[in-house]
Length: 567
Image (cartoon, rainbow, N blue to C red; front, side, top):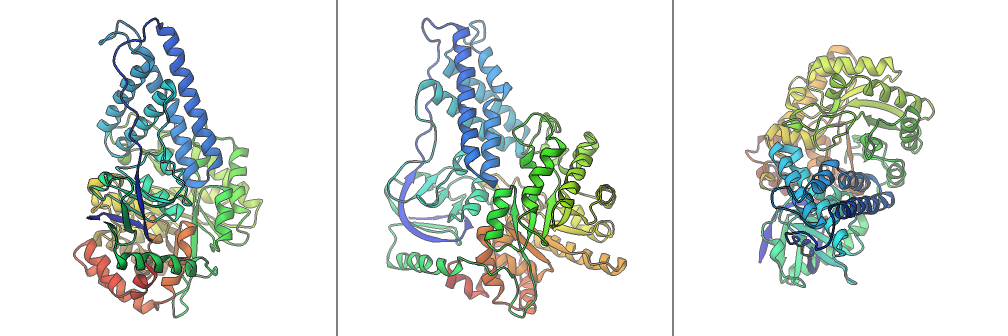
């Protein structure tokens, strides 16, 4: 059998499939004989706290994206809407009569998830998180095993419809050879964390959740292909990948094309621990420091000193190197109780990122002050940028706020088409731009980046997205000519981790590429095989393609190194 999906992490492996365990079963209706509503309510509160504590303990042992996902899931385990809703259902006077604690949690979780689905967009994706937490609380109440990755003494290929963020965040690459799902999308939590782990992965591959346990399969993470009963050709490809992977294990710390044209390769990080790992991997700096992880898992804004400490923990690992720090990207899938409105009908198009400063003034200014103090205490070259900037007026106001705080280099994220199309004016006010291709793709294609049915639309190879990248770099060149000041344009979205697309981005005029540190060696290796004119020719070919598939195929066919390396 052949299964086809979206390849999100390169790698060719052969191994036995293990499916995710069956989900926690729906509890029976009706009350527990002899149990009082008060006692059942206390059981619910205790189970919620136990699940939250367990997730927080796992978060403390994780780093980066995994830590943030686990902390967010832990918050959801204590969601008052879920817990209070369950306690209310214990009342014998409610429709349906008295219930057990397990049944009350089950029904309350279903109601909360349904409300989130009705909101659409990012909030609809949170419904899966609620159902995951519901299952964990019910398992805690009933003494059943909590949902999780199957345990096996031998390495295996993990198959599932999709994974809850708390499960994906704790995947062990030492045991899991590859990850294949029938759901999810190329920018889902599952895909992003698989890239961070360097785990070969294919998402949105219908049918893989029905492959029987123990079935041997071949997975090609670059091509998005899964095949049962692999033959000699597939086994040879997997063996060759294993041998070549060692050749891609290191990056010398200098990103360049074959003609010597420099393309600095930076890392996306969130914490001091991640920054240390990125520096050890040879990253030339940080292209995206996500600051929202310092704000998660807390009901109030972090203090000035807490923020200074968090940012300094990253700056210290990159003395005299560039660190681009993104101000708080709250809203949509990252709601914060002190900053965002969870009742927005369409949060992905709502008050998020830079826009929160208009609704809740002061948080951004205080963050900029903390960044400035941390920068003054270290030797990193700190650049600051705002997410979700849409107009030249917003760019000018943010740049003024940053300069007033003592931060000399202020830029913007280009994540919405308006910013790309007016880049000449946006960059007349800002010092630089960074392309967030994850959001730029979803806003360009009007396709939620987390939904499997829209995975084909949500592809950064879409020619429309590539044209917006070109519009941004062209606008930067016009702004530079008009102001007499360079206006660099980097890329910090997941697309930069794709070696083939990295070549195209370089040809379109990107000045830096930032990615998960695990992608640095492969990207550096492929970039070093092409000259700048060759990269520009490949970029022009991608722009001229009618579809994303045509763009990808056209470029890959002209880069034989990709197949040689299994990329």
